[in-house]
Every structure is written in structure tokens, then in C-alpha cells.
Image (cartoon, rainbow, N blue to C red):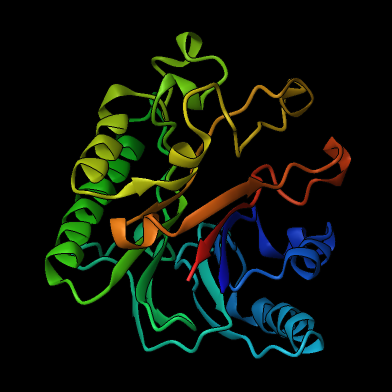
Length: 277
């Protein structure tokens, strides 16, 4: 049996819903969808979540949802949509209590039809700004705590782990179109990239890179400026990082690139991985 897990930064759930998110969900119907940058207040979430649930219901599937709104209006926000009931749920990273750190981390324990137990983390890392010391400090503080939490989860054992989300880091020159021009840009700073080095050294596997192999790309984010999408001048910022037991079951991946600039529902593209489990 195959389980499809997708992750997508929506750049605003309300805008993405208006621009065709529902059509994409109806076509691909992921078993788990991790969404970042939901950027909607509680009052606006209900009708859209009901609409997404209705899509699954029309296909004979029950949907379970969990979300956390950022305490800063119009910022961040994460959500998990799953056809598997949640066996556990945890919101946020312990020790990060500032408003800007909310709506960025959900841990959802699920059990696949195969019986495999998996803790799925939906993560939205701060974007940072190399010209703004405060924003970079926020990003590094978050990454430090995320690293500690990943280590805790790995030591805990008792099931597989899957980190899904917009990590706002292009790991290597293969993951960014113009590496040399961005060596001093947030998202490609050596200090940022070293966190992904650390996470992979702990045993996590970068599913898309492992399945893709060597070679430039693929990308998952293109700026709205400068015809970046049309020129495929992108960055790979969205990841699925899995523990070895789950990673060895990965059979393929896709990054949904809209047919045209005008048909995008976000500046990010959904990343999906199929697992045989």
C-alpha cells in the first residue's frame, strides 16, 4: 500500500484557496498534507477547513486536522491534514515563548495502514534577513531549539520520524539556481546550511535529494519578482526528512510546478513523496 505525504507553504491559506488549492488537493488527495504560512485567524480557518474536509469526504475519506495560528496577525501558522487519526499532538517548541515563534511547529503522531507508527513534524522556520540582525537571531534561536527537539525525538525511539516543511534553507549549490550570487543571502548562508548538515548527520534522510540523485534542482520556491518562475530560477526550501526505516520505503517524489505563473496558488510548490507503507 502507498502513502502519499505532501508539504506546502501556502503563502496564505485564504489566498491559496481562492487561487485553486482545492483543485490541487482534489487531484492529488495526499494522505497527509503539512501546510505552512497559513496566515489566517481562527475565524477564517473554519470554512476553508470544512471545504478541504468536504473534498476528502466526496472521495469517501474522513479527514483529521490540527493547526496552530501565529500570535502575530498575518504571520506564519501551520496545519496538518491527515486521513489517519492523530494518536498524539504537540504544538510549538519548548522554550520558545515569543509571539514570532508561534504557528511554526506541530508534531502529529499517526499510524499508517501498514501499522508503522510515525511522528510527523510540520515545521515553518523563520525566513531571516541577512541585513537584519534581530531576524537572523530569531532564525538561529529557532533552529537551535529545533535541533535539540529532533535529537530528543530520535533518542526517544518508538517509531519513525518525518520532518516536513518550509525550512527556509537551500542546503547545497544544487538546491539553488544562482548559488554564487546568493552566498551572503539569508537562506543560503553557511551558518544556516550547517543546520541541515547536522540534521542529516543525526541520521535523517533528505528524501527528494536521495530520490533525485546528483544534479541541479529541483526547486520548490520561485520569487514573484523578476520572472523567476518562468526562468526556473528557484530555490529548494521545502523538505521531507525521514528516519532510515521510513526513508527506505520512499518510492518516488513530485514537486507540483503549476502550468504557468498565473496558475500558481503560492510562490512555493507542493512537495510530495510516496512511501510504500
